[in-house]
Image (cartoon, rainbow, N blue to C red; front, side, top):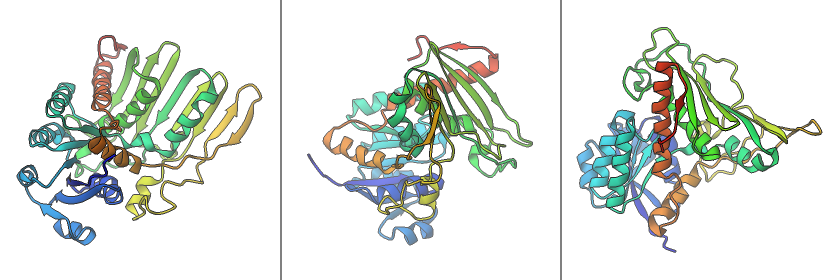
Length: 348
């Protein structure tokens, strides 16, 4: 097994690049952050003095030193910039959502395969503490009939200075938060038979989708995914019900706030949440008890990615998985516009 070091460039240093990627890359064995594309030179140099700060994507593409590029640029630049990086011979991680248009995703996958490069998508919420806990206890719930997951926020005032809130294809919470929830559902249950979605722009002055409710149909199983920007008392982040019991989890995974505060995977408290323990109810005995929450581990993504590139092990998030998320999002848009159930037959 090789332990080759990979030189990494991050494109963009907003919330995603500075919080979800740089701290994980710099604490993962075998990865070295060498370049950042950003205008925030002083901020980056204060945190990572040895990093080269680039002002142009051409500098990144021309560098023979860079092995892996992390694309955290706005959604509208996921396809074009990722394509340019692949054409330059770089392995690529794309921040979710993978692309805006599924046909662009197909092209990127074919390009990566033709050049024998690793293409992966950062669906980090697979390593949320609640999701990991659910996967651990899923066999104890029996046959699953209902799964509900939500990602609510209380942001009643629109901030049009943020690109995600602006008018534009690929903006809004369906692509932002919906991609997480859909990816988790597909990871658990596979490809659905049909989709129904209700999308809306609810808040005053809002111009991008800020509410959604999605139903995925699997034979007798129903998967309900939702998000709203005006929920002061959030719903459970997940609730799953089977013929042997139910599991309900409140409270967001702590890793985002920990990373913002400077806590990294090198700290013992990283990913630990002792406050929001899931409730497990045994159906037959109607016994309620708390479960220990699994430790969240976004860093596992990069550990697996390093091994994928240097030792040809499994890709932590296959690009085809991320492409399926985009295909579901596109069906949701059609379903909401036409107010009807949309079959997934022939989609995947």
